[in-house]
Length: 196
Image 1 (cartoon, rainbow, N blue to C red):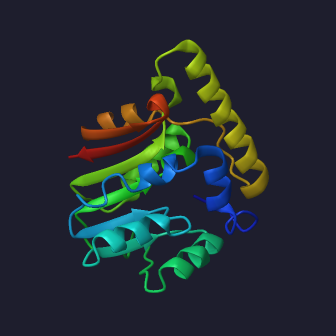
Image 2 (image 1 turned 45 degrees about the vertical axis):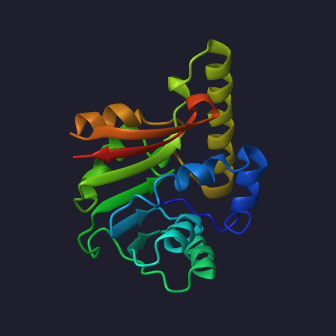
């Protein structure tokens, strides 16, 4: 997560809604009422997940990892009391949340990234899954949309990644079991609850 979001951090939510309406936010917040008490949000972004979580469950013990300064600033505008940590300084947690984070990495980088996270029994993943859409035309359109998104982030943030990692395969190989899934846009956007 070495990308720099200073060009788009303030307009991030508006750009997202323009393209996806509320689908990504619905994905981010699909499990907020079911999460355990101690939560680590990795790649929090502009604070919309933490805002929704703390509104729904104010007693949640939330820690946040967000390396981008511009995104931390936006998140603090929504939630002035957020506790920012690193993977090394994070306290033990009951669930780790990765909303639209694994798409920042190549398959090898995603595995290494997951290995660096503090252990927790629950992993929440929200991301894009174009290859799991039924229908050749729909799948092709979703892949095109992903290609456009990567080019946009390559230009605006310096992101080097150009394609999605096989998230489901990576997590299964690491011993995670998918327990629940919420699907948006015909399977293109998914919120997943994994356990290990």
